Length: 141
Image (cartoon, rainbow, N blue to C red; front, side, top):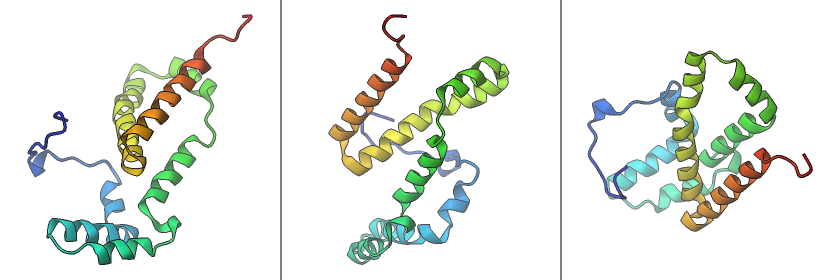
C-alpha cells in the first residue's frame, strides 16, 4: 500500500486465491456485484442498497466472513498449534507462515470497514494484549 494513495496495477498482476472466483460468481454475491457496477457507472445506488438491506443476515457477505472465522477458530487450541509448529517440515511451515501477515491485514481491513478505524484499533490492541498475557508464565511458576 502507498500511504493512502491509489496506485495503478495492471490486471495481469492481480492474482486471486483458489476458490475466489467461485465465491465471486456465487448467487449470493450478485447483489454486491450489482452495487459495485452501479457505483462504478455513477448510477444511483439506493435501489441496490435497498436490495441488500432486504437480505437476511445469513445471506450477506459479512455473515460468510463471520461463519468462516467461526469455523476456523471454534476449536482453537494453542497447544495443538504449538505441537504442529514443532513437527512441521520447513516447507510446510513456510506454507503456513507466509499467509499469516496477509490474513491479519485482511482481517483488520474487514473490521475497519465494519466499525471504523478507532474501534478497530481498540479491538486489535486488546487482542494483542490478550495474546501476550496468554503466553506469559502464570504467577508463582
